[in-house]
Image 1 (cartoon, rainbow, N blue to C red):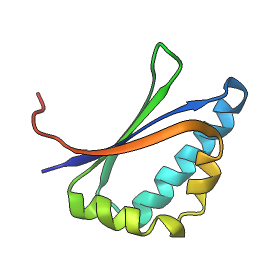
Image 2: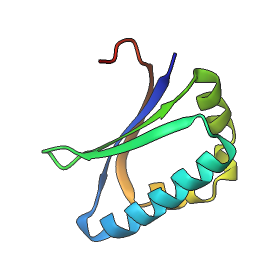
Image 3: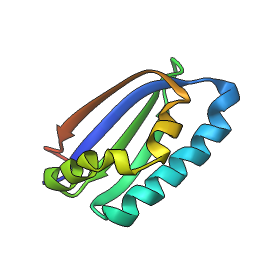
Length: 96
């Protein structure tokens, strides 16, 4: 069963273009070594907070990617442009 890792954070308007470029590079790097990442969706909510949800084929694949986080130099560079960041993992239980 697929799982998700969902992040919530803010990005300053002045940093958004650079953030998007860094996020794109991070996603590409993660997928190179961890093809279980099936998609990543970034949504700007009406309160200005971004939700960034990454879907994985399995919890094991998500866990392997998280364990390798220190090997992705793009991760701290990307997250450096965010504030008030939180992350939660979840399991997909219904999808239509």
